[in-house]
Length: 277
Length: 253
Image (cartoon, rainbow over all chains, first blue to last red; front, side, top):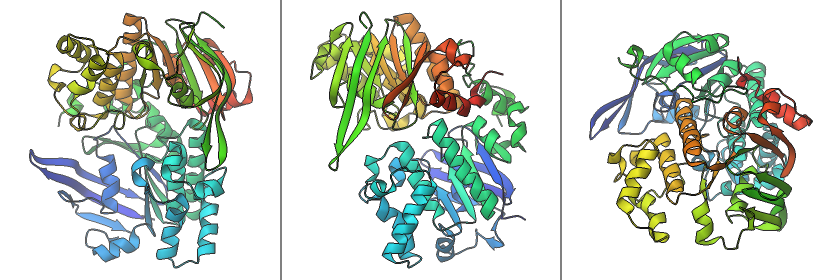
C-alpha cells in the first residue's frame, strides 16, 4: 500500500544571485517501509524531507506534479489541513537538538506541550506519557531529564528527547533527518531498533535521511542516493555497499576502515561526467 | 608515568548540577608520548570530551594531576600553555566567531601573544590547511562546514603548538569532507611532529588516526588498546567488545 507518493518535486529558492534549485525533479513512493535518502550536505535530501510537510519558507518554493499522502493531496491542502497532519500523522525528527528544542523551556514541558494543547490530555496523564516516551528511547533517568533544560543535555540525550517527542502522537509517517548522527554507535543501535520496532509493529512509514551509507545499508529497505538535487541511483539497501554508480562508490571509498592501511583516504572526484548535468 | 608529552594521572572531574554531583570523569590516567596519536572512544556522556576540556582548564578538576611535557599545568592555564596546547572543537558552526572575518579569527591568537608578521602568517596558515587566499576576508557563514573546520584547525595551529586536542573534529562533516579533513590532520601531524589526543565515537576514525586508544564508559577508563589489538579484535572487556561489534560494518573488507 502506498502511503506517500511524490512525483517531480522541485524546490527552488529565489536569491539575489539568481534562482537556486535545491531539489530538481525528485519522484518516489513510500509504503509502510524504511526508505533511506543518502547524499552529502547540499544534495537536497533535507529539503526533500521538509517538502513533504511543506515546511519550506519563502523565498523557497515547492512545486510537484503530485504529492499524495494517504489519498490527500499535500500540494492542495490548506495551511489548516497541513497543521492537522503535522506532528499527528506525519512527524519529523530534526537534525540538531541544539537548534530544534526550545532552549528556555524544560524538556518535560516541551514533551507535554503537544499532548496538553492538541490532545487536551490532563497534566498527570501527559506527564506519564512523556516519561514513558523517554523510557522508550532508553533514557536512564527520565525524572531528571524532565526538569532539565536542553543545554544541560548531551547531544545524544537531546536527540533522543526529540525522537521521544515525535513518537508520542503515534504518527503514520516519520521523517527522520539525521536522527542518529549525533549519537555514538551503541546508542545509535538502540535508537534504530526503536524506530525499527515502530515500522514493524505499528506499520509506520519511515523516511530516513542520513549521510551515513553504512548505517542506511544496514537499516533501511530501499535507498535513494541524491546528488545536487537529483536522485542519481535508487536501489535495495542490501545492494548499497556494492553500488555501481561512481558517486555512491566514491562516498563509500572515502570512509576509513578498522584495520585499513592508514594511508590518505581517497577523495571524491567531482569532475567526472556524472557530476556535471 | 613520566616523560610523556601529555600525562593525566588519576583525574576526576565532577560538576554540581541542581544540588547533585555528576561525576563526569573518575580516576582516569593516560599518557601520550611525543609525536604519538592517542584516541578516546566511548558513548556520549562517557567523559571523553571532559578529559580534553579538563586539560585546557575548561572543566573543574576535583582530583588528580595533568602534566604537559613533564610539568604540572598551572591554573589558570595562561599563555605559555596556549602556545603549546590547542584544541579543535566538534562543531565548526559554534566554535568560530560568526561576526569576525577569517582574518580576524586567525590573527587574534597572534596579537594576544605579541607575535608580529601577521600578514604572512595568516596567508601561510590558510595555505597550510588548503584554503584559497581569497577566503581571508570572508565571514564564517560564507563557508561550508568542511571549510570552517579547516579554519578551526588553522586557528589552532597559529601559535605552532606541539599538541592538538581534537574533540570529534570530523563528526559534523560529510564522509567525503571527513576524508579530506582526516588527510589534512594526518599530513600536519607528520610534517610538524604534532602530538594528538583525539576524541571520536567512530572506531574507524580512531583506528585510522590513532596508535593507541582508551575505551571509556560512564566516566571511567575501561580498557586501553593498541591499534593492532583493535584491528584483531583482541579486547578484554565486554564493553569494548560491544562497542567494537556495533562498529562491525566499519571493518575492512
